[in-house]
Length: 328
View 1: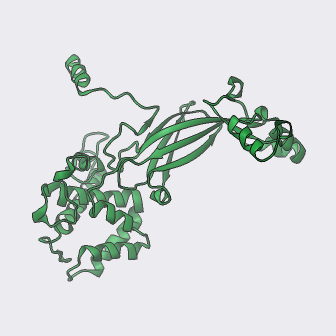
View 2: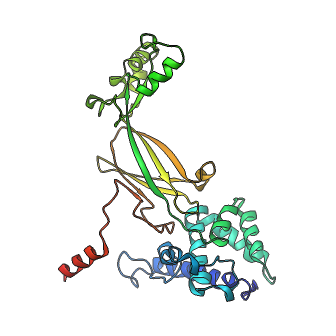
View 3: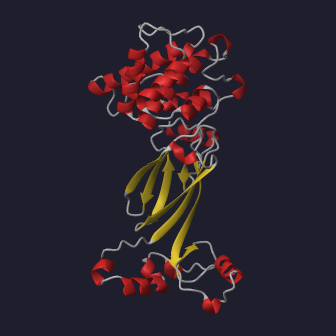
């Protein structure tokens, strides 16, 4: 209570911050006292975890107000002033800024505004000033709008290295005044679904499927240098899309044919140049067999049906009901 916020005007500055700090205290208590909590379970906080706010953010937009609304003008005060602000700050701490940097900025806010009457803008500016992180996009989307998080895998294309140009490349070469007999030696990537794809390209190193690449390596590299070259056998173009309005990091789990997994986080800045799609090219010596976005439910994604590749079959509520009946 040392920092005096006007909760009549900005309800979340009291209730939301308190709920957030309560969530942190509960989770810390659970980590330090595992004998009190069920095995392999976190403290059962009612608010604060990203998954807890999904039903509210995915609900009827006509009954949802921005966090910055006056408490007397909202339809659902609990989720609006308590749950959503707590979740927003939790995601900011855990996923966007990192615990150490967030905690430093948060403590700076408490010290800078003790015995004073800060407004939301004072909180926002202090968090950015103390951390040196531009968070304008985060405050705008989480606190000033009713947008939601929804990021998915739009599509995946698999490519292989070949020394045969695609039809599109042939047309381009001809438009530049070349004939097929005069095409320069080049290395091409062939889409698995294109007319140039051959089964013999699968699972082979690029130098095995491209004569031009093999000759270049033989002419310009020693045997020792060639032995140290890592030649990926698989190339993928992964397209992520963002049906939701809130830009967030893309947290991805890649699964390979040998059973290994790789976790990668692409920062939210990747949406700056294109707010709809983000493409990532992956080269690997192992075959990619699965992609999952936000595998640990860290971003409050409201629709997980588009989070996987290959797309997972979704059972209807009736099918789930029948399965539950059989189980009993």
